[in-house]
Image 1 (spheres, helix red, strand yellow):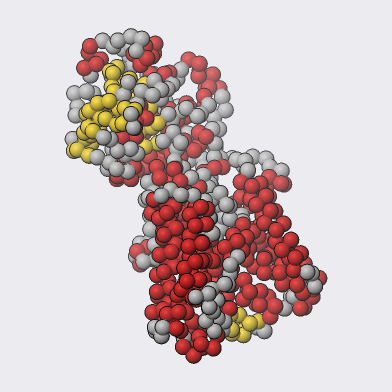
Image 2: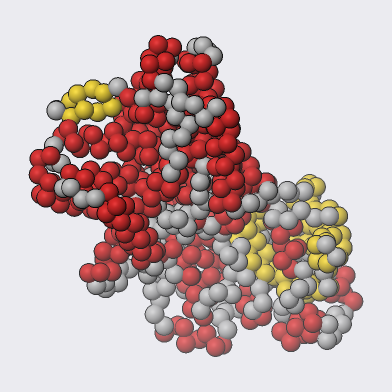
Length: 261
Length: 363
């Protein structure tokens, strides 16, 4: 896979918060069609890296490219417009709004003609149809009432809605931040299957997770972040979970070829 | 469930500790109806239709006063009179609802309204500016005053309560300065700018006397209902009030939405200013000093959550009517004014308690 050109790539990212350097010349590469897991100890700068890629924070230094074109985001909206969707750990859903409203939040569909252009009338029927379609594409379509508020759903169902939203609009890259952290065993399994489903549709995924079994199960490559930068990239079949944890915590130094990757 | 469960890649497969999941219940993403008690059903129903609470309260109180006070209360004339009496507070409540839906509060609504009525009156009556221009200046001023609140809340990140507590005083002081604490007399308005009083005019229908002011109130609520429920902007208002951070991450320009909400609230207050000149019959800088609190009362009784993001804009219209019905009904049965205030106080507390209960709805 690494013979390809990376779809999303970053070089020398620096992000400082006052005296704290969260990203210290960090590099990043995501290749087409792969699931890249990002792991790292708390405070290693994973979140800052992901926020930089998803437009939630603006970086102080460094370059990012999407499909070879340089890019710089000043808001999540810009990243979304460029085709990068993020499923945040908090899900970024509005609990009181319906499933359909949430899926189209910030990019609603309006009626055609003057009703839409002058009176800004929403096309509810169309939005609900598309939302239903997207959910059933991901095998989530046992939802009877697409107008149901998100707060009446279980944790796994909410995660499903957030993933479906990302999959529906993420044309190039989907970033998932700790998608299984808040879920039970069974719900986690369902979400991992969702992730593999999305991958099968050809969209590359960046998966941030603390859960080693999950990472080793679904990831094609594992980006290990340490002290604000990329320490190494490993393939799950070449290393054990304890190796990964040892690299991540600094207990063990990764071999040269992993650092070069 | 779906076939995607079975097509999970066998190559890597599930973790060993998850093997027993094969036998487990697969109904994870089902949205089946669970068994519910009658109270649960009521709670769920009200969660879906929170405006039903004030609607029921309004119907019950109209019936109750109709029985106790008889025809004096339950006549088309008296009911339309209630509409007239609540029209100004109703319009302020419409403005207040917009802000409260974003989890804010606007203590300056009445001050904006009175300030704009003074500006409209001074321009049209004292300075001889054509009335339409005086009105437009008032609308622009109201929008600007609201936008100022919005900018202070979003740019300086001040709590809405503090911001509008400050601007309430500022607008009130400006109002006293511009008016010289003097009212503009009714006769002067009639001579110079009768259009200012147009919303005080009545028209009769089925024995009722409707004022154009109460029609304006209903039209404002209808327009806001459309904006909030049928446009993307409205969905964003709810999303921002529900969880601002989530709305931001979902791609909504939350600060822009907030400023637009405060500005629109200011415009609605300016419309209220025009209506208030007709209702009061003069321009009085001392009027509606408690209008902000009365508008919050109507919003709360109308079932809009003070925590934002929940409730229908039609609720505060009902809430304003409930207050009017209580005042009219209790007056007609000869109850002292202090007990009217007492009753309104309990209504507020009960309304908020019901809101809290509805919000605890379980999935």
